Image 1 (spheres, helix red, strand yellow):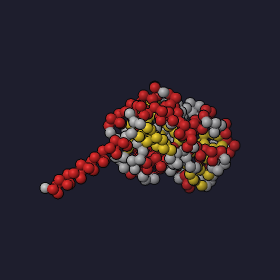
Image 2 (tube, rainbow, N blue to C red):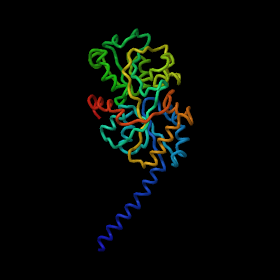
Image 3 (tube, rainbow, N blue to C red):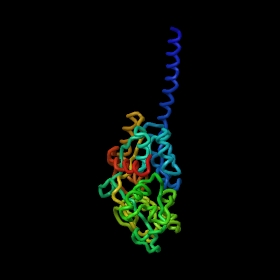
Length: 303
């Protein structure tokens, strides 16, 4: 009888220790920021979340974690050290293929024309003389990041139809540029002849379109559209999801969805800053919406 009592007391003690730890975890919400632009800009773009989210979610603090690359955020979500993140479709697919129960997509952004997609766009320097990607045979192709949808997965799978060959067979060399922003800067510096990045494809090319990495770099004075030309555009890609850890309490999930869903109306400048450009708002996101990207990633680059 005393042995049973000891086991029960030990179980109660463990529960008493575990419960406050879980409750304390919810005092802080941790948001992962994908790599692709410099850390200072990413933190500045998302500062409004630190200002607004604690009151909306009923937590003491919101912390931002800018990863060096896409994989840093993916591993943080898989390991439970991050709670929320905005991902590209391929990064989400990579997480799903490793653990379907790790995260849950809840919203995706909507372009100003009402679409829920964007494009992989290949750029070349205007002074290169390249006006179509088929003219870049034997030259240097730059990808953005191994976990980028528009900067790697989609060009890898869609370019052969245009080139008549796999990219690594058509181009003289292929390499990664360390994220979208760094890749475009490397293109401008002459380290690549063609670079794959992303944009909404909505609006004027001369302005960098309405959203995406191209527009972000224009807005920051890092890119003059007079210096580049668009030489290829992919089929439409599903906009990436906002995700949260699937094991968060349901009431916390509900608060997160409510905050982000209302953000385009309550504070458009914060919404625009977080999303890197102009969008119409958010729409619900589901696993099914990303199934084509999950299938493509599984078939080409795995998890």
